[in-house]
Length: 493
Image 1 (tube, rainbow, N blue to C red):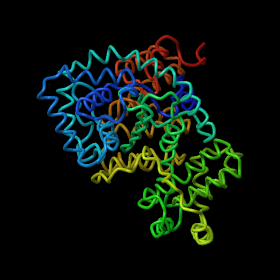
Image 2: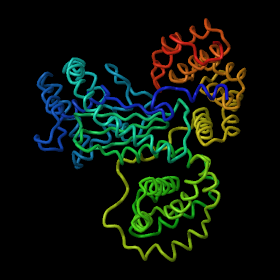
Image 3: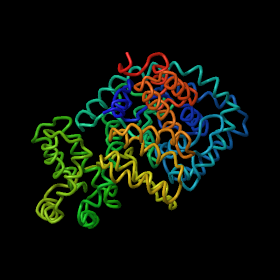
Image 4: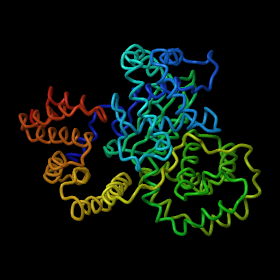
């Protein structure tokens, strides 16, 4: 249990989920620029005071820039409503680097399609950021964000804790996956937008008197389960036949007719929500029927199977493997024939527009795909498959790939192989592909290894290196400073 214990001992609340909750200057700048460009979906009486303020920033920039902002927004809006514009600009905001550069964080062809459609707005943002003195305004309004975040923190914390508890998820996550919950007071009130791009999930919420915690939990369930379903999709025999059923059916939500993993994941999540909320059986069955008729053909199956999961010792990642293998398409075909058209068509679509939609397929990238495969397998508890994927990256493509090294270090730690874990963590630090979040935690884990070996001098060196990196994923800086101040563990007392 040596290194696994290190991972379990991380002090921060969001450590196991790689979740951060914070305001974001990119979003603030984007919303200020949008407001200057003419975006408006509310009566002025409904504005949060911060939004009232940012709408005045346009007066601080020259008329030519204001005109170019309006022209860009108008030309990319077409005949659509203002409400329909928000998602793509938020997608852009979470896909660019910090101020003042505002550069795409990846090659343009890898960006989500909606962000790519307005990528030219980033050039205007750079100019607007400077001429509207956004950095100064950000300092002025930041206390408003802190106060608003304090109001919702406990509700978010409770929701995520309860969700992890129900899913039987242990502490310890794979550092390359992340979910950020951003509060943006300059956005319209009561809005929730969820964007996903590869391994990064972003939830952007506007101000609200009653935070939409259920919507945030829904996004969090996607964060935890999208990869689990994708990894085990092949265990569901003849799964394409499920998609064929809804494609031919009338009255289904189009969101569930294009990708079978979307249908399966959403079916599972809807069933989970009913179970977690302890909805009375009769009312739950009514909801299951509505979800089923909308196209979520596996909601009844998962709702029943989750009763067994609740009394088991398995995590949802482990249990889903068994659930997937036990799905009988012939049984689901029979259920469909007997029940589907007997249920009235729901009066309104049930798909949440804020649920992340799968991005278009990026160009082939075998290293990226293998790393994702290894990460998904590790999250699903399949260490053997994860190890094979990471080793293939090293043997076939990049002998010094830091992300693969980090994955192998985590696997070694779970196998209680101290020496191998140490070697891979050290190689991850040197690798070019390792993200800052991987490197900072590699230094921290190495510091703890040397603390437990009573080599305090080496341990402190590694903690100090973690502090120099500055990355604060899963509150790494707090952990690193704690390591400098006090040895980890009691073995050397």
